Structure formats: C-alpha cells, structure tokens
Length: 347
Image 1 (cartoon, rainbow, N blue to C red):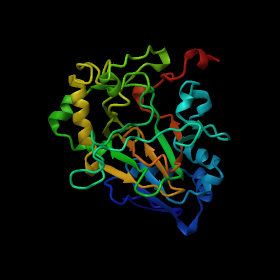
Image 2 (cartoon, helix red, strand yellow):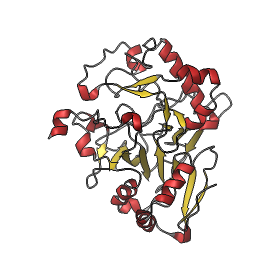
Image 3 (cartoon, rainbow, N blue to C red):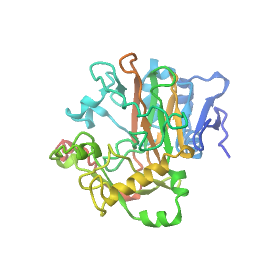
C-alpha cells in the first residue's frame, strides 16, 4: 500500500513493474515541497522504498533556477552528498563538467568543452519485432553509478535541464530486486557468495579494450578495481538484488567474477552475460523519455541504468546529477573511501 501524505500523491510508474510517480498536491512547487520534506523527510523516504528505489518527480523546474535545491533534496537521502571538486582528480574531471556554483552537481552533457558523446546507436536500431532495444547485449551501457568505488554510493538524483526531443536520449532502468527474485533456485545457489570485480573506466580493463588487445594501464592504489557482492542485500529493505554492471565497468583482465576463470571468454564472463540478459528482460526494465524539469531519484544499491543514443550533432543535451553516500551496508562498515588517495585524505 503506497504511503499517504498531505504533500503528494504517489502512483505507479506507467509501463513498469517498479517505481513511483510523485505529484505534489495543490500545485505545490518543488521549492515548497523540498522545504516541507526538510521538516519531515520520512514520507519521502517511505515513498521511495515502497517504489522499489525509483521515484519520478515531474514538477521540479524550480531546481533549474535554484540549483542548491537539488543539493538540499539530495541531503535527505544520506549523510553525504559528494562534493565533486574534492573527489574528482584532474585526470577524470574531463569526464564531466562540475557546476560552477554548486560543486555537488555534475553536468552530463555533450556541450563544449566536455563534448561527452552519447552511447553508440544499437545495431540494428530496433529489435526483430520493431521495438526499442533494452536487452543486453543488444543494448549496451548497463551499470550502477560508481561501482568501481568502495564503498559504492547509495543514490543518484538526475534532472533534465535540456533534454533531447522525445524518442532520443532516454535513460533505461532495470530492477535488480525483481530480477534476482525470479532466478531459478539452481542459479541462486550458483551465485551465492560470489563477488564481481568492478573497474574504473578508461584503464584498459573493459571487455572492448581487452578484446582489442589494449594493454591495461598501471593503476595507482586509489584506482584499483573493487570487489562487490554479486547478490547485494539492501541495508534498508533487507531484499536481495543483483548488483553488477556489464562490459564497460567490470574488470575483464582479472575478472569479471572473482574466483572464476578471468577474461572475456572465461567462465566469469559467461556468467555476467547470462545474468545481464536476465536482468534486462522487458519485465524488469523501464525506459524514461525525458521532459525538461523532470527529476528522478534512483537507488544504486538495487537498480541498474543505461543511457541511450541521440543525435549529438544536432542537439545539446544537459543533465545534472548528484551522488549520495552513507549507507552502503554492514559489509562496508568503517572502510575509508577507496577512490581518495590517502595522502589527499590526510590533508
């Protein structure tokens, strides 16, 4: 039963088996709603967990004029909202623009000077029955944010500042909780206790890089690949979920599955492909076609997502994202952030 609130109505996410849409009552603005949630965030949190870790807020245009609102809202979901000026090195700052006034916000965009290009268009662009492709490996790019870190983050908040026209630049989300629940018993037993090895992109450890014969780059201690449970128990809901990425964010040199034959043709790779095909079936996937001012909140601990292609030579797409940390689960308790060099952490 969805949580009740004087502030909002919560309805199921259309076309999905998970997720919720939060509409504020009485024409309440995003600014006013955020202020109300700051006084009592529990209804918001209850709505998010009741919706499987995914909320769509269609009425958040205020953030575009007052970006600090996005940080205030993010702070309700965890004890730390990442300050990107402190945690992104000079080397990987080139992946994103950091908002000039609000360092907690990164800009995901193809606008200069970043010129970050979209995913390659799937080939063929449609499935055999004429549908938009979502299933791996036809659809590439499935991941959970910053899984190459330990502890990994809890939530991401993502808002459309300047979306592409409908039918391009969508974001796909997949339900790791529902996908795990439907696994056959023999496969649940097979993956029990296994760990995936997650790699920082751009270091020659992706499946593509390994198959092309690119030598992996030497890694500094804070760049090393990180182990995570393949089945992750959510620290709030207690529900198990598949926690993994595919070819671009797993380590295909020493992994992708710890203790299994490594490499793109090893037993670990075959298991990744089997599980990724399962989690990206239609019944676990939601495709979001963006409208300006829409905000989504997604739980990285049990959801995967993937970007989609758009005509980058015709359209500029601008999205803002914040990253929230603080409750990765008991298996990460007391760990120092793997991605921050200890010399920097001590300063």
